[in-house]
Every structure is written in structure tokens, then in C-alpha cells.
Length: 247
Image 1: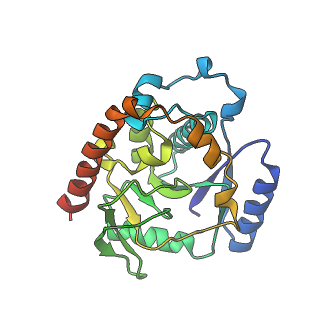
Image 2: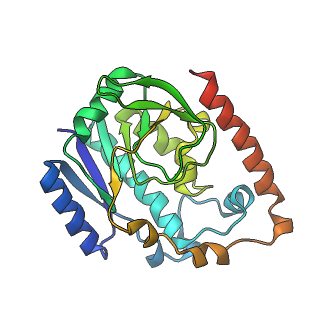
Image 3: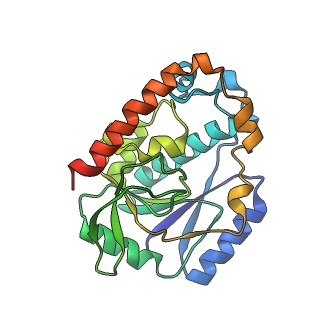
């Protein structure tokens, strides 16, 4: 069976119970990855984090929840490599699994054997460039507009997991932004046109990473965000080229 690694905070017991019930109903094989709780680690003890580069690239100070999220996903990559999983799903604990997920994922990787990472859900899919369609009818491709947002559920090969462990360390961007950047990581990265999983209820508005107020409070003054504007402009152009060049 296709392993599904679910990232879950020790204090988020209700979320673990819900996704466990979803796994039982869909007959999915899930493994829990204990999430890194950024709130429990003082900022001066954050390892694998470039504070200066984060501010320059993103125009904000990192939240503890962002740091914890980032390190949690790297922890999942490490487990995939150590366990020898040739292909695995990484999911956050606020998605709903379904019974046809494995066969649809495998069909997509059969359609593009060189694929390293496939996102299964996003907050936005704009400027979608179709690269192909699986035998089960799922389109996969890349988006010219981004960041697409969300790292809630995606599939990765073992080789790609090992490569991402190196390329995404240290942290210099929020994880959902860094994950999209196949042009920077060297991992052949795609997304499905339509989501293959759903979010659990209203979970997107009850995130454990940070509230809208939290994000607003860490924004640095406008005159200090020129570096972020430059980075985003260059990144946007790189995204467009990446979406079109490999078609």
C-alpha cells in the first residue's frame, strides 16, 4: 500500500483522531510523524534557519508556527529516506483521505515516471499549464501564477525527498512557498489541476501555524521590503518559465 505520512502535533489529539477515522474509512495506510512544535522552541534555538534571508526574501519575521511547519516536513522527508519508501504521500492532519487516492496517485506517476513531487491540493491554481492526463483522467501540470499556497498534501519519491532535504535546508521562506519552487530545488515538481483530497470542515480557518493577525504583526516596514519585492518579481518570472519550458 502507498504509505501516507501524517504530520501531527502532540497537542492536536482531536485532529489525529479525525484523520485516523478518515484512514480507516478509506482503508488507507497512515503513519504519524510527530510535528515540531515551534511554540516550544525559543527563536535563538532554531536550527537550520536563516533569519536575515527570510526577512529579505519574504518581507516578514518568521512565526514560530512557520518554523515548526517547515522542520516537520523535513522530518517527514528524512523518514521516507530512512524507511526506504519509493513513493509516499505527506499530509497535514486537516485533510480528508479517500479510497481511490492510491490508484489515482500511481496512475499519475505512471503517466510521468520522471515526476519527483506532485501536489494534490492548493489554495489557488491559476495559469495552469497541462502537461498530461493519467489513464484515470486526472490532469497534471504546472501553474504560471503563484505561489499556489498550501503544503497540506503531496506525493514525493524517495529520491526527491533526499534531494529536498538538502535543497530546503536552511529555511529562508515559508514552507508552502519553498515547496512550489521546482526551478530552485531541481526536483521535477507538478500539481494536479483539481484536488485529490479535501480539507476537513473549516480546518483551513483554524490553522496551527498562525492567524491572520499573527501574520500581520510580523510584517516589516514597507521601506525594508524592497528586497522581498525584488525576490518575488524574479521568482514570479522563474515560475512562468518553469511552467512553460518543460511542456
